[in-house]
Length: 344
Image (cartoon, one colour):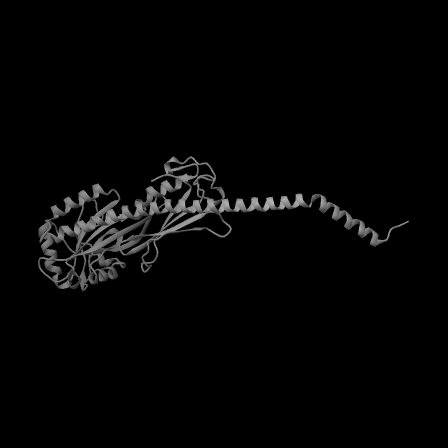
């Protein structure tokens, strides 16, 4: 005799009740165990993520401080050179050369230092005659000409020619800084405020490497002639240093690369606000890599140092990648052991 559908449903329901009575407590224990395991794993992941962020931030901030010290030590040369002019009524070419050569020997990334005069067009003829006699050669204010030549500078309201320079400088004496289109606003700013100003220009790549040339200027005043505050005086001249930004950052870039970290120094527009605090974030919501960005002050400019845990060496190479915080690494040059940073 065939059963009715209602009888079948009753039998199925009875089986479910029996199964729940027999296995329900075990299933509940299993679900609770899975939930506890998931929560414990999540909390452990969060703790390791936080630790990785803190370590990466500390490592990045240390590189930021080191680069800042390296740049500041070069700029201190410029302030020392200005002090040389401030403390004397006259600085001879020999005095300048001794200071310049000593500075270059102590700072391997310093390309050159120089002294430029600030003169009006009415003073030009007397100025050129004076320095022609001082140097024992014909001296004139010049601009770059065709095919690597130099031609007499055209008439301007005022000029900023290079007067003193060290022997290794590739720029000739007498070249007018105002021939560079980047320089007129810089000189105007220096005339208004006696603080350092930087000019950063892209150079031609050498051996496939980027070269960003930095010129930093400071105004010099004749304190023995005028007792007015510097801000109220017309500059007597300017001291200048030249360096290549990428040479200074090369050491830390190589060290970062060995740890699987990509280092980039960004030169933003000149009106970017000055700031030095760095922040760590993930490169994207779906990515577990970390990125740190912080500022480095260069005179009146604000550079952006970016460090990204890119795993450039091999997976888990840096110990900061959020998906691999337990990885064992062997990167003594970067100061890591067992995924924990211990370097300087």
